[in-house]
Image 1 (tube, rainbow, N blue to C red):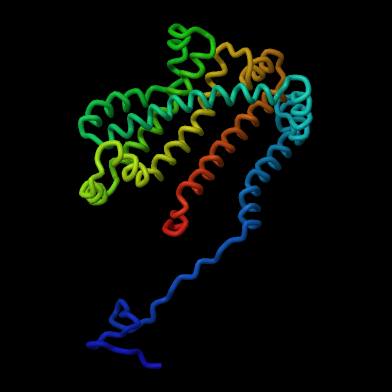
Image 2 (image 1 turned 120 degrees about the vertical axis):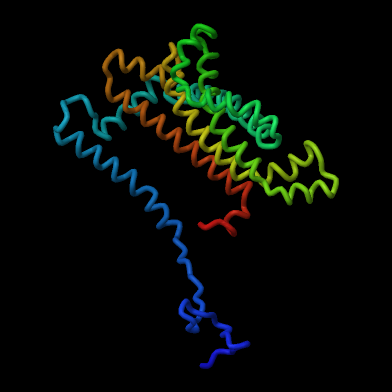
Amino acid sequence: MSDVTIDGFSSLGVGPAGALVRPRVRQERKRTRGRALAVRTGAPAVLIGIWWIIAVSGVLASGTLPSPPQVVRTFGSLFSGEDLVGQIGISLARSATGLLIGAGAGLLLGTVAGLTRIGEEVLDAPLQMLRTVPFLAVVPLFILWLGIGETPKVALIALATVFPMYLNTSSAVRNVDRKVVEGARSFGLEGLRLVREVVFPLALPGILTGLRFSMGISILALVGAEQINAQSGIGYLMNQAEQFQQVTVIFCCIVVYAVLGLLADMLVRLLERAVLPWRSGVAVR
């Protein structure tokens, strides 16, 4: 087979040394849902297996590391005796309320800093300084200012979640293509309508990344928040278990926190697929 040439060049391409080569299209092999699910569940299964082996091997002192079956049995007793579902609901309400306040504030501040130079100059430096302060370090102040009720718990979660949302939103808004914005303005879009119909849709991938970080951090902050004299919630169960040295109950609470974090991450992933269906056609994977 002879290649068609135009002015001495082949229609099939030119190699690095001037040799004619045929371009190759990389065929990507699609993975089945079953295989993807097996890979995703394989790593947790391995970790549980290692945990089980260490628990029954006697490497650690008896009673310091319960085995997975012991934890499962304790879950059953917590469901029946401690209203575990109700305690999880209380913790989720705290986390969701703090996330709504913190992520909402981060979204607003990030939009202002990303859209206007004066907004960035006024907001960025103070927020960057506050971001480096560990949120657990302000617990004593929140107790002095807000007491020991629900308010300091929610405020701590809000404080922890505002910064990842701010950083990702401001970066996403700032990096929106200027030509697209100028084109929209030429059609008469200005002000809030321009932000709502042009800037936000283009910045949405970065905003959702910020939401993903904020939701994960809301669970981390929940752990610290529920150490502030909690009378209900998963933290309350953990504090009670610590006082009575119930190691298995503590492990159950840790597992609940981990599952809540995983579910939060999965929720944002599903949200991304729902509001960004076009990404599957342009993303690397």
